[in-house]
Image (spheres, rainbow, N blue to C red):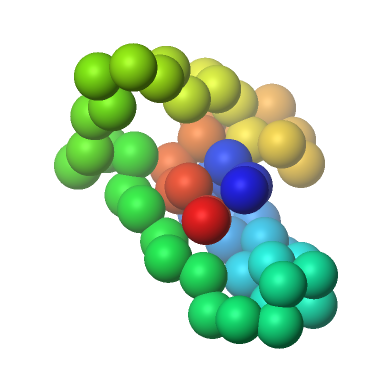
Length: 55
């Protein structure tokens, strides 16, 4: 699972495919809420606001 900004989305997709050898689901964090989980506020790669969850 990766939480990234728009700039690092492609990197996260590549990492996911390399690691799991399967296509990930991409969730727009602006359009989705989770009742039991609060996603990190910032990208894993930089300090920008997190925008996507790659799972």
